[in-house]
Length: 102
Image (cartoon, rainbow, N blue to C red; front, side):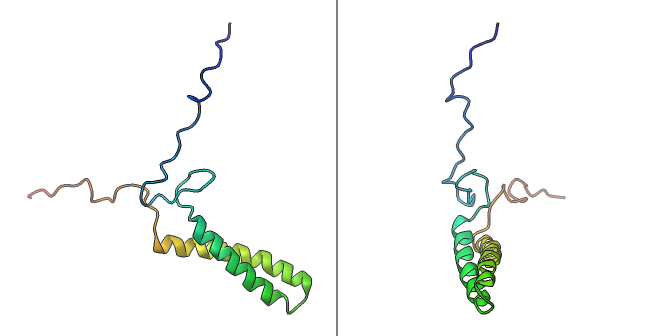
């Protein structure tokens, strides 16, 4: 005979700690290193630049420039945000080591 399923609340995955400094969690998945603000600002500025450059060649090129610019801007924005506020994945290597006399 099969056991009845347990409490559905107990089966949920634990919530990621979003208040820990240096984690930079993804708003949807909770994985570290997302930088949603930097990515969003980069995508907006890249889309505007791509659209203005593509508008010289016509409406299809403007649409394509918007897409390519948004993608490139998002990647550049995430890189800039990571450079300003790096994601911490664990303690630094020297944190747990003691000095020993030789």
